[in-house]
Amino acid sequence: MTDTEKTDILSLTLPELREKIISFGFPAYRAKQIFDWMYKGKTFRDMTNLPAGLRTFLEENTSLSLPVIDKKLVSAVDGTVKYLLRLSDGNYIESVLMKYKYGFTICVSSQCGCRMGCRFCASTIGGKVRDLTPSEILGQIITVSADCNNRISHVVMMGIGEPLDNYDNVISFLKLVNLPDGLNIGYRNISLSTCGIVPNILRLASEKLPITLSVSLHASDDQTRSAIMPVNNKYPIPELLTACNSYQTETGRRISFEYTLIFGKNDSRADAERLAAVLKKYMKKTVHVNLIPLNPVSEREFKGSSRTSAEAFCRILVNNGVNATVRRTLGPDINASCGQLRRSVK
Ligand code: SAH
Image 1 (tube, helix red, strand yellow):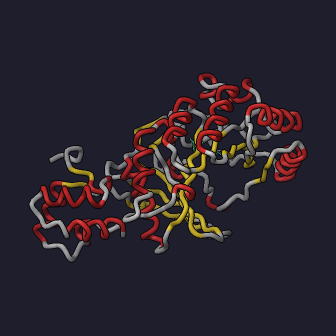
Image 2 (cartoon, helix red, strand yellow):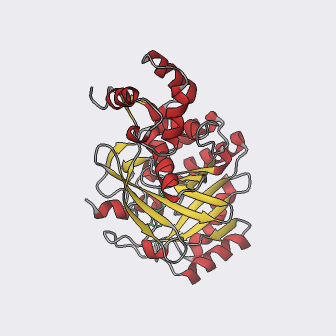
Image 3 (cartoon, rainbow, N blue to C red):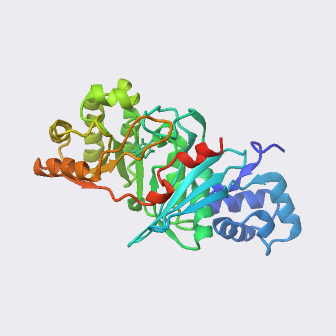
């Protein structure tokens, strides 16, 4: 049996797994045992309370797509851990574990590579290799949680890939991660970040999942945004912000905007003033802007703005009535933003 013909058991809910196990001719109660092991990050070989015959059957007829840790970088500054993970087909992705006062947050990848082409981003160099399956996204949390021996309470979909370019799998993942028998992570503790695929922002609004939407804006006018984010040619700022406004009205959830400050490109006083004006024009409710000085990528020519100019940019937004903060950079010594570790194994 090839891997694609095997049942991907990590994508099943407990009742679904129970049905599967019964259909395989094994007693129903085995499902819960298998389920608990999977969520502890164990492989079939480790499932020691199962009879050998069942373990062999599972190996031959099902797949358990937990990514394997290939490399781990731990920040000496704040303990942030960046993981290079290997998928069952030999492709690599990254996850980042961050510790906050309220608990552990993981940043997960949604695709292997990315086809969005943002000019400052390492993940898109080399394009998209493939989408991740729902269980491969979930598996990152299980593997990292087993490794750090802690419960992970918050998830951000800000790793490699564009989640709204892998829509169906991401929605299935969101439903899996929320299962009470499984990881039981509340939708309110999940953020999804997108470069702005408008039709899928509207589709996401109709799913009525109370997750937080983050939108990578990075510019306040179409010319600047299109020059750094090709997706803007298809979905320019007025269309994007109109969709963001409907998302907020329909879901009642706050939107946050990501704005990466690139030295000399989008970080002037005029940029800040225009950003405040455009947000006030389109967004009827409160929004929040996260300002992040660009993390330089060796293959790219862009430089990050200084902390001082990031703070000045922030003050202009606040003085113009827009909530904004300069994001604290976690794991500065391990280059914790995604995409660069994966590039190093290519
Ligand atoms: N595709 C999604 C999520 C992945 S990237 C998106 O575009 O939102 C997560 C965030 O990191 C995005 O806001 C992205 O624009 C930003 N980012 C990418 N490369 C960066 C870099 N070199 N420095 C700072 N932020 C970066």
